[in-house]
Length: 138
Image (cartoon, rainbow, N blue to C red; front, side, top):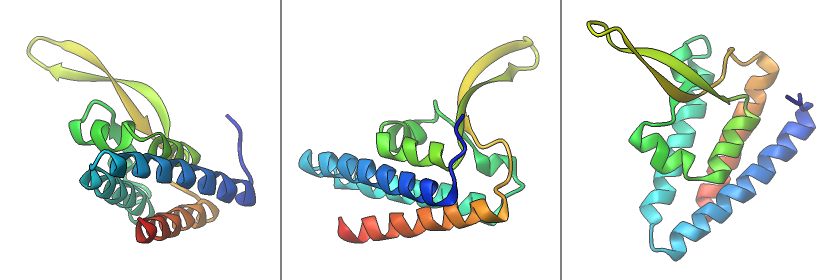
């Protein structure tokens, strides 16, 4: 795992935004404008929730098998790249599916393991600004 300095993280966010822009252009070419709006909405909500509730793990965890997450986040290279730059990492989670049968199910999640530091919060704010600018242009 490479730790990026502030300027490097900002540059990486700009690159991820460009990739997200390409995803959106593809959606628009296929007349799927709603998908683009859903991706913006989901990313904005995820990032805002981490900023507003930094210590709440549930806001820093995305279940990759969730239909909405799979449709609007996982299917977008730019969205996944942006979340990874913000410290989200893929990992397997073992959850009890049925207590009675004591079965366990491995589930793939995207998680940010710790609350963002004050310096990292600035990076999250920059991501929100870039999303807003990109949404205005589409």
